[in-house]
Image (cartoon, rainbow, N blue to C red; front, side, top):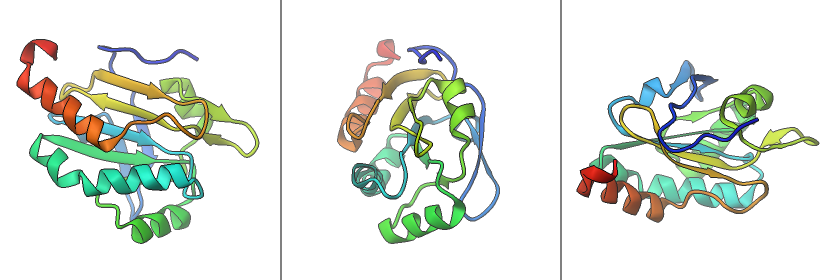
Length: 161
């Protein structure tokens, strides 16, 4: 499994969305900067903190022209409960196939129990990778304030895009 690098397009992913329908990535983020948060599961305190921080930063990210989505292998009921408990204000996917996602984007996978390790991407409006963060364990992930600063930098410095 190879990791994605700067400038590569994000491979197409279809993930069921909490509340119905499908998240189609990167298509649903097209025309905006995109932030994709793959989280370990609702049981992970680090993931809960990360998702809550991105929800709090959502207004600022929206002002910068960025959209946020997140998903995990959790089932729909568990994911919906997390959305409600944390007041998440961005689309959250559920029931991701860990093997397929890992094969597509290079995320680390925990074998037993079977879940995806924290992985994050920042996409340019054309769906190409601007930043990829891969964690092999509980810590090491995108931080909302850093993402706000990075997207601000990209918008203020067109040559860096």
